[in-house]
Image (cartoon, rainbow, N blue to C red):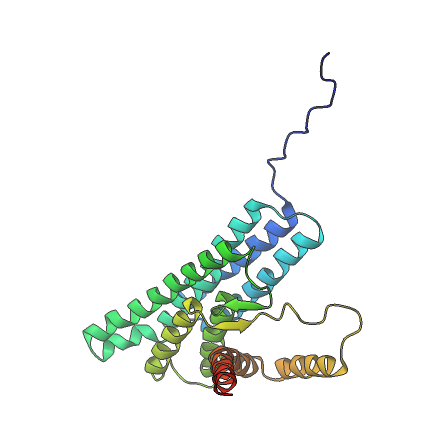
Length: 255
């Protein structure tokens, strides 16, 4: 007797428009940041990277909410993130500050572009590690500083001091240290809170709402300084949390 069961429907090879369109918007923002930095328009370049971060925060959520997630979208998002949060912040920082290191000595000029490349390489490694651990890692934590957070920290630094009238040449050594620290933080094993465990229901604690309102108001008053303060606090939160946990374990073992 012949098998009359219907044949399985062929799997669609198309791509979903909306989430990938948002990813493309983030990719374009990172690309535009590179162009703006090469023209010396550093404030616009920094804002473009933050716009890329906004697109990055939306594409995955919309894909999950609309049931349009796909392996293509995951891979495309990672490639776009490498441009927006790897190449773009590294080149903005290089054009603003690190390029001026060659004025100190020729070898320091090489250190400048090497630090920019280190940041790009660490961003790529961070993204690759995240993709391989996405199904098994604790969603409450990031292992290593997330590349959008690292990019935001560097761009907030450039934006703040450029707005205050400082040149990258004046802060080239500080920029070098910050770039290397952000790069190494991305590939570290230090845990950073991911905020994915934040309240998602309609009812949230009053303190949570108050803090959200205060942050929004502060961002409207002085965006670059607020973003820099938040970025620096988040950068040190990982090592401080690691030291706190180690101290707790040492105290427990001593009892």
